[in-house]
Structures are given as C-alpha cells and as structure tokens.
Length: 331
Image 1: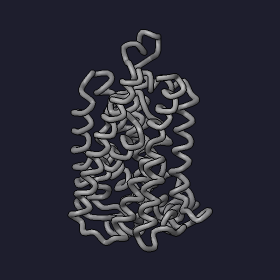
Image 2: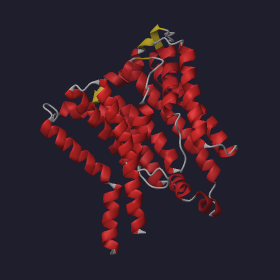
Image 3: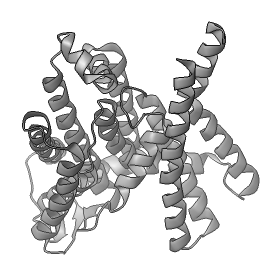
Image 4: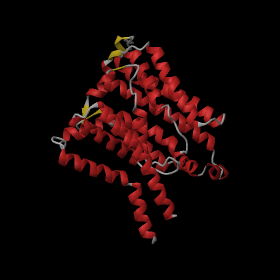
C-alpha cells in the first residue's frame, strides 16, 4: 500500500463518524415526514448539549487509556445540588442572592466543584493508590447515585431560579445558550487536545504509558488532571441538565452513561486509548441525538427504544474493533 493510499484510509477512519452522520440525516430526511427542517436540526443540537459535555470528560480519560463510569452519577449529584439550592418548589430551598445574576456563577461553580472533587477522589485512588479504574469508577457510579437519593430523599426540586433558567430560554442564532455552551466546550477542549502539551501527552499516555514515562513526561500528574476534568465536565453537564428540566429528580440522567460511552466510541475514540479526537466525539453525540429524534418522531414504544440503544452500544464496540483491525493492517 502506497503512503498516499494509507493516508486516505487513515482520513476515512478518523472521519468515519461524520460520513455516518450525513448518511443517517439523509436517510431520515428522505423517509420520515417533517424530519428535514431547521427546527428539527436545531432540536438535535439542543438535545445533544448535556450528553455532549458529559462525553468530553469520558473521552479524555479513555484517550488516556483509563475509564470513568461515574460521570452520569456525578452529573446527577451536581444537578441535585443546584436544584436544592436554587429551586423554590419541592425540596428546593429557593436560595436568593443579591444581585440576582450571582446565582449563575455561584451555581456553576458549585456544580464544577462537586464534579471536580469526586474526579479528584477517583483519580487519587486510581493513580496514586494504583487501584483498577473500572472498579473504582463503577463503585463511584453506585455510591454517588445513592448519595443523590439520600440527599433528596427520593423527592424532586422544581421551579429553578429564573436567572439560571435564562440559559435554557434565551436563544442565539436559533439555538439556546445551553447548546452554545456545549459547542464552546468542544471547541476549547479540542484546542487543548490538539495544541497544548497536556493534550498531546494525554494521548501519548493512552498509546504507551511506559514509553511516555520513560520520555520524562509526568504521567501521574496528567492522569490526575484528566480525572478532575472528567468530574468537572460531568458537573457542568449536571448544571445544564438542571436548566433543561428546570429542576432535579433523584433519577435524573439515568442511562446517559451508556449513550455517552456509545457517542465516544462511535466518534472514533479507541477503547485501548491514544486514538481519537473530540470533534469526532461531537459528531457521535449528534448522530445519537439524530437517531433519538427519529425514534420520537416515529412514536416507537419505550421497549423498542431500549433495544435500539443497546444495539448502538454494541455497534460502537464492534466499530472500534473493526477500526483497530484496519489500523493494524496499515502498520
């Protein structure tokens, strides 16, 4: 195989999800009535905001050759914390600040802090104590969700502070501000991964941790930062989730982990680490959102929806294996 052909194959593998997204949108637009219209596409982008931000943190740790199964529960805890503080109905305390706009930065910092602290705790056990990432984050997935139920007593918070809810109501170029926050996050983190030493080192660690350590790169520090960022972005996803629902419930976000996992892998991030990009992850999120929108328009029952979601996760793993096989043949 010539170098030029190899580069073309690599380009197709790296951008396969974008071709898949275009194909799926074309098929749905052709066969589903009322699918091909600006309002539907705007809804797809809007609906992908929470999942997109959550997928960023998950992608970071997978690129580093690690795993974080706690992001869904962390988002739920951050959402519940914001809901209890800044909702005025249900179990909400209706916390008021003067001036009122301070509710936005305070609630956002609280959500980021909750996520960052849990990410730091996970990272310490995994990086410093050398415990298994899958087991530690699975345990966090369970105990953090239990904490959500314990804190809320199984009840919900409603009627979010208008200053915070503004981000879900106000639109710019046809999209709510929550969608623009997700897009800006992808732009910022994509720049970080492509243009900063931290981003390059993180992918090197995922590719070969031992060789990266021998090259003088501080592996443990970079992995700790990755887990903290995963927790913080999950906290931000929880903040956005509170805005979308104008409150919080104990079962908020249940099942999002599997969709985030599917989006990351379909987006081109290898489960073995070291391969993938965040723009591809965003395409994966948009692909899942497009499929969910089509499911809703067709009015499929919930049990069929669950089957489709399960098959998507299976397809994501199979696609990752297929791409790894091709890359090995190119080596």
